[in-house]
Length: 263
Ligand code: SIN
Ligand code: MN
Image (cartoon, rainbow, N blue to C red; front, side):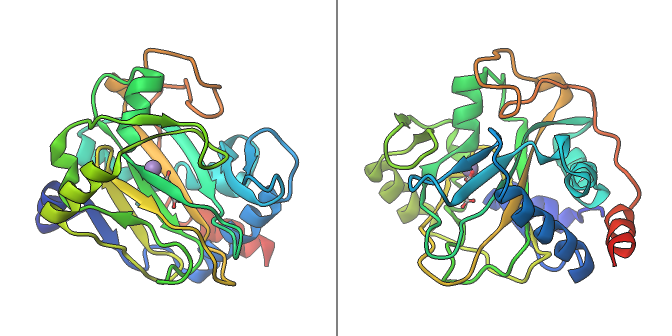
């Protein structure tokens, strides 16, 4: 999957791109089934919400699940990011966010590069996310919100929030958010399972809690240019990875093959 010049220009201008229906229902079906099996596992990579029961996020599933190993090397996710970042990329972080029906908690306003720079000493924002919806995202189940063009502000001042949710995050204060929204507005891309969002490491984003009866599972690959690898190893390896070798994409049908074998 190659991005067009118009798509590249839109990404540069707004800081994100929304691509509907990139994966089909056989592919998202197998990934979603495996995600819910992973959420039910008792392992350190599965972080719970404050209720200590509901899964919030599952890290590093490419280490222990075959479908996620394949997704982590999927050409429809890796190649567009290689195109944007201009060369080989490695997986800095890999997570499946549950945002479970009724109990999925808020993600406060933040920039991902804010965390990568402060906690991991990643030299530059030559790293970004590509996210895949495994369930339909609607206005009801905690859609991700972005402030368009906020990636052009560099790395903003942030405070380390250890309290609001079960997962620590470098978050941005309300006055800054108000100013940025006045300038750039707000968007919340919605769409079917199989849709993809890619967004700049400095794009400000967050998501509200999910009080609907619908789960909102999204997988995030955080990919970094191989020359820009992290310099500090403070966080556990399964949160901030240390294999800086360039990812070699698999064949385009690698997940369909798994779905067929499971049928
Ligand atoms: C994140 O920003 O890392 C997660 C946001 C979400 O999944 O809603
Ligand atoms: Mn984030």
